Length: 207
Image 1: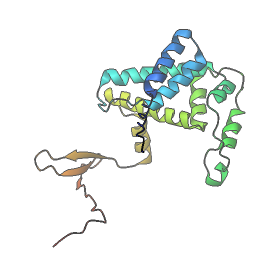
Image 2: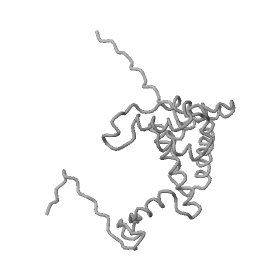
Image 3: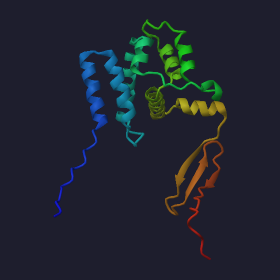
Image 4: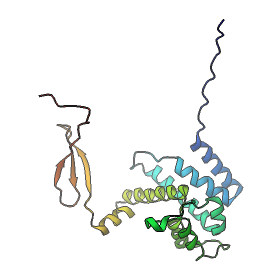
């Protein structure tokens, strides 16, 4: 005879965004700098800001949160920072002309490894030179946050300034409300060009 065995229900994935947010808040209450930095960075990279980039309150809240994390980072020493976010074990950076374990350590040795970072410029340089998935993602979110804040204030953001310095022409995506046709408009010349969508290879045009 066959016996029917009921399958187990798949476990729900934990809400990492909520878990790291709670950990961050608890660390702030306990005034535990290391936990504030670790939980804060983790929360920022697993959470996602609202798609509405004009939501001033949300943009300001995220900007202030990142600023709080950065302030606590300056209290850490480079040694403590490395303990929280180990450097990625990649060693062929010289071959590809990019960061690796050796280049990060070379930079670390220019600092007093057991003295708090304190200076914001030193912290930015450290984050920029560092090689860690968590820190790299945190930097992306930090830059994005500054970009949104600047745009809300009607000013160009860091990325806008970089693009201008490099002389790269930017375009704005638009959609005609009447025809529904999509087009790109140059932010420099105002010239308009249609958006051409490629036809998948598995589809053939029938005449």
